Length: 481
Image 1 (cartoon, rainbow, N blue to C red):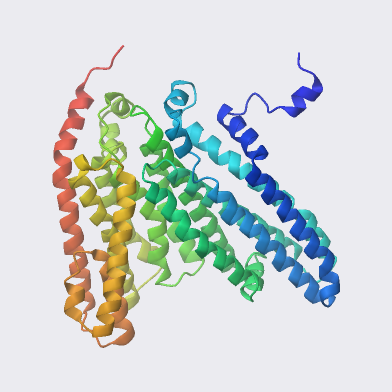
Image 2 (image 1 turned 90 degrees about the vertical axis):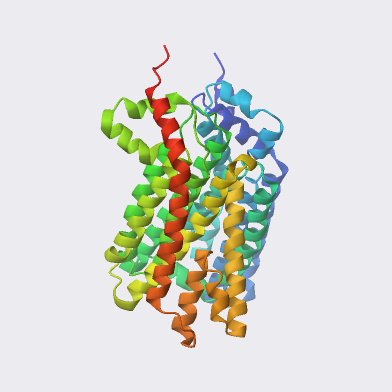
């Protein structure tokens, strides 16, 4: 029987082996140790010198700003970056297949990687509370609001870590490196821009839960972070999982749930009519993108749980089967929900309703276009998820560049020539409404969006028909003993 000291020094047996392995390596790693010591040293030095630097109230505000800035840099920049190589290192060393052969499923492997990094972020978060307590005695502090702000930052850190861990399963080094490289400067400048300006006080006021609309906005923020984080982890698990594991059904069910809940939160927070389509896109894009980028699954055992439920099970399978053919049906359902119910629930009407629908058509089309290309060129694409992301980014950037060029030379035809890229509908709607010198009729923009998106959906449905016939053949296969 192990001694008491040995039991305390080791992790419990109920912990996942992957989690134990990653925690041992992470806590001993140089990156975490350096970040931990530097953070404590800087905050301790600032706290000791703040009292002599200014009056008591200003010293307290300065301490809060410094604490949150350095804490945010630690958990929003450095910690998530540690997830970039989480799964790719295992893939390069060819250890994923060995892990999957054990009781560790793909989901447990990914969750173990994520929980290990988030646990270290939680340790950094816990070390912040003594500084906040000491800062309380400097006066002028809303203790509850600042504690809530710490928890919000930690939640965002967990979401960003999930994103980096999930994309680390992509074979494309461009995706694994591009997103962190582009995101790190943006987040860093945002931290300094908010931390040392009046926006910091506004965030603290929001975290005090004094305003109902702001409270619902925080709940919406947490739901969005949780949804994006879960979608990223589920994508990572799908990329390393064997064909016999089904991660798509649960991912789509959760996506449908969040997409249905989100509009009610938008209404409760009184979201602006231009903000509603953007928020809906953030909720819908991960599920639509992964659904269209999945490979066709030829394993008959995947379909057995649906077949056992009879006709209703097969009917639900058309929406929830793993693979891009059912992903097309899922995309249609989510798009119809977005265009019809979201404006109604959020009470958008009149010209604002038309603008919101144009925006949603543009967002939906921006996902359909790379989906069509990935499906048509599937035989020549190895990493469908990475290709989908790169194509989506390329078409969005192209639309923005051409919109800026057309604005300079005042050319409507240039924009109409790019209508095959549906994202161009969004700047076209903005140019027409903001400047009034463009002859874009709202009805024409909606018609163009419906025609182009309908064409892309038709192509996807035509390509999906043979795949659905193959799925029907798999459904008829007798179960193996």
